[in-house]
Structures are given as C-alpha cells and as structure tokens.
Length: 133
Length: 325
Image 1 (spheres, each protein chain N blue to C red):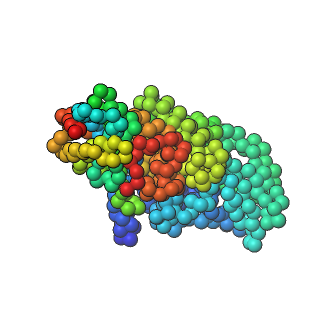
Image 2: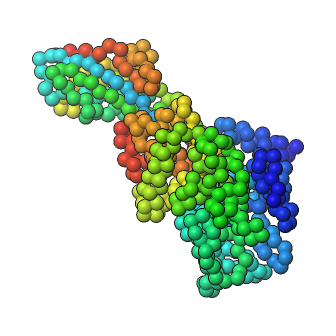
Image 3: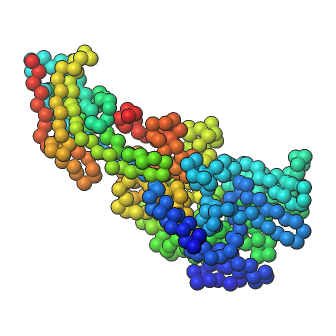
C-alpha cells in the first residue's frame, strides 16, 4: 500500500513537472509615416503585457515606410517544478520618437489586428499609417 | 548468467544474486554504486554491503537531479568531476578514491594521502594496469565492477569492457537504430552511461548526427575552463548532465527543448523546432539549457546563473529578448 502511494505520487509529479525552453515568437509590424518633416524620427515597439518598451534599431525608415519585428518571450514560469510557453502578447504599441520625445503612437490588438502563422509568429493584417503634423 | 523477460541479466552463475530490472519495483535491494559521489561500499570480512538510497525504488530514485528544489538534489554536489569519495575498506580505515573527468577511479589514497592503489583503463573500461591490492568495486566511470563476471554494472544493463558493449538490449526502445548493444554510441571518451540507457532515441539519421555534433559542441564550450568558464561553477554540472542524459526525438514538440528533472530516465526531449536556429538559437545552446535543469537548475530566467543567463554568456543567445519583467 505504501509503495502504491509513493508510486502514485511519483507518477503525478512526473506528469506535472517539466522545464521547457520556449521558441522565439516574433511580432512583425509594418507601416508608413507621412508628414512634412519625418527626419530624426525613430520607431519604438512594445508589447503588453511586457512592462518596458524598447527601441528597435533594426527598424529602418525608408522613404517613410518601415518594417520590423519584435521578439516576444512566451515563457511562463509556474514555480520550481514547471514552466510552459503559454504567455501571449495582447497589445502591440508602435511609438514614434524624435529627439527622445514621443511624438505619436498607435496600438493594435493582437487578437483582432494580427494573424498568427504556423510557426507562432504574429503578422499585422494592415500596415499602420502615421501622419505627423 | 540468467536473463529475464526483457533480456535483462538478473543473476550471475556464481552466486545467483538478483539484480534490479527498471520496469519492476519488486526486486529487492538493488545496489546503487554507479555514480561515484557518496556511494560508499562497506567491506568487512566476507560480508559485502552496499548503501542503498533511502528512496523506495532504486535505481530510479538514485538518479540525482541536482535541482535544489528537490530533496534528493543536494547529493549532486558530490558528483563534481574529480571529487573524492571515501571508501571504507576495513573498520576504522578509509581510502579516498580519486576520479578522472569521466568519474573513473584512478587511484586510492589512505588517510595520510599515500597512494595505495592505481588504475588505468582503456577507452571502454577494460583495466589495463593496476597497482595495490585494496578491494575497490568502483571503477570505470564510477560504476561497480563485478570481479566474478568481469562486467560493469550500469543499473539497467551490464556491460562487458572486453568487447565494449552491453550484454542486453537497450530498455528504452529500439527505434534509434538496429544495434541496441553499443556503449555510449561507441564514444566513451566523451560520454558515460551510468543508467545503461541509450543516448539518442528516435532521431532520423541526419538529425542524429546534428545531435551528436551539438552535444559535443555544448560540452566543449562548457567544460572549457572548468568552473572558470562561461557558465561558472554550473559548467561542470551541465556537462555531467549532458553526458548522462538520454535525448529523445519528438518531432512535433512545441518547445525548443523539454526536460523533466524528476523523470526517471533523465530524458531531454527535442523536436523539429529545436533545429530552427531562428527560433531556438543553436541546438547546442538548447541542449545546454536543458542540461542546466538537471545539472544546476536555476529556472528563473531573470536571475544570474539561470539557464537563460548561461545561454546568453556561452552561446550568445537571447540578445533579442525583451528586458526583464
């Protein structure tokens, strides 16, 4: 009986415990910036629930158009015996900065405005349009 | 010798001793001696007794996770390469076993530090030279040598060092190839097999070679400077975990890698996604990451010393990750 109890405990522990390394999931954004003066403008992207935004140096603005991708970390820790990769982005916010000052921003809802491809990456359905004054 | 239903050797001809089979817990008192560390043999006169782990079902329970969160994880500290193990060979008398990088006993010294026995092996554990007369059952890779049969006890299987093979089939499965008897894929310089299970399971031939290369790469990077390497003191532990793990191919695994630190067979799972460097960084980094959960196992990715931190330092991974939350 005692052995059976221990076996059951072991079986349960084996089934729930596990540590995974999560694959990179990318959020692809694209858009266009129009206006009289777009010089010195840089694009920043952040995903919510992540707390911090980060500038995307690889996002280059070419004649007002930009494309970029943001790495979203899906790791969700569940304590010391288990973690999984179930964390998902909810909101993607694209921000424009000039000389360190935010000049514009647009938010997009992951569930409505993005498609998820087979590899788990999110791609914007419709490019974003910024109009700077 | 007698073989059981699963082709396991369960008795030798001379003393009819019963040895454990991994699929049953009914076999009494299997001897746990295959991991060096603080496994201690007490030999007094004709009585030979072995310390058996307190956990009810060896050999499974004696597999150390090294995970600080588990109650039997602390023992892993004793498995560091080159660690010294005390051997009690007579009442009140002890010898210290010195081990090489694979955990093989290379010498015994008494309490004054004087060498009393030395051992030299070939690649597959056959004793090529020895000095001294002290009885020491812990030999090649820290496994117990059965002098009566000339075999090594690898828990799930017995191995014959004279031919460099196991005596019975791999218990884990038969889909990794046609040959189920080789020891550590015939690469004993790099690997050891304290559990008796095959290293790679289920990999197609092209991916199997990539796996072997990745394991080699990970071990090379992490063992480079010992405790002063990129992974710090965790490096040797991760290397040890990689040398002992069984790698299982699950094509549709949705993760880069998966490990279960309390799974009995020390299984590390990888899938097709694991080979995608854009998604998972390098395969070597993924294997080291999973090995870290067995070997050192700080799981919180925000902490220095975590598996993610190790990947960043040793494999230049994760530079695209968002800032810590």
